[in-house]
Length: 276
Image (tube, rainbow, N blue to C red; front, side, top):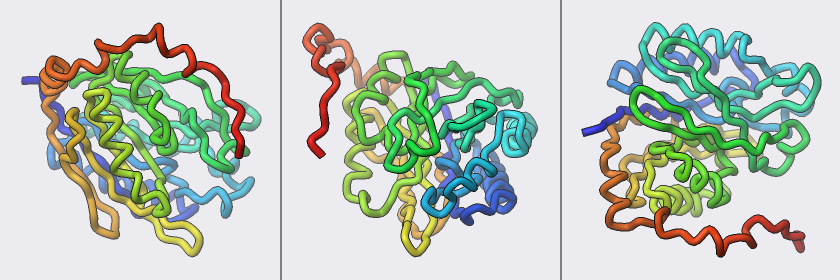
């Protein structure tokens, strides 16, 4: 039996307080590792918090490179605890603007194994971030993983691409608003079901006057079932053991990937002029 124990950190952040958020994140990573988690995921932009309308151009001053203090601290912790950490930050890739809304994968030896940059930018994110168009899949000691970030969840293609490239667990850091709370579980469960993968989602919890990031981090299985969800109005930690053999079993009875007809799907790649 191929199993992996994962940890999802629903971080209750303080907007703009990087020192506080990093210390809290490290505390929760340690808590998840103590419960046996081997791959641990933090929420989108966890160290700065998320409210671009408040940050404005200050976000550029808060962004970091891969050698910055946040990734450096988490690399040391990953090596100490022997865990993988997915650390989403505002990543300074270029010497000038724009930034990447990125999830950095740190392996259990404390090395940066790779980076995923959010491709479906939401609202005003386009003013600060750029996209790469890449959807990497990473080999870990426990299985193949991919990453999406928040608004990628609004589209079926990212999860499908990752599944076709061999991902068994798709991690999704998020800063999802309460305004879309009704579609949140539906989208997550559908992506897991239609691709027969595990979808593991770490959402931020943060309440401000004009923005409520409502938590409800969860894990969905390859049948689209919710395996665990955090429902409290607060931060928290999910630790869940996944049986990766379930993926092959599910695909044997519902071969949605094998039964595709890519020759029919050309229209999916055609640009569409929005009417709104």
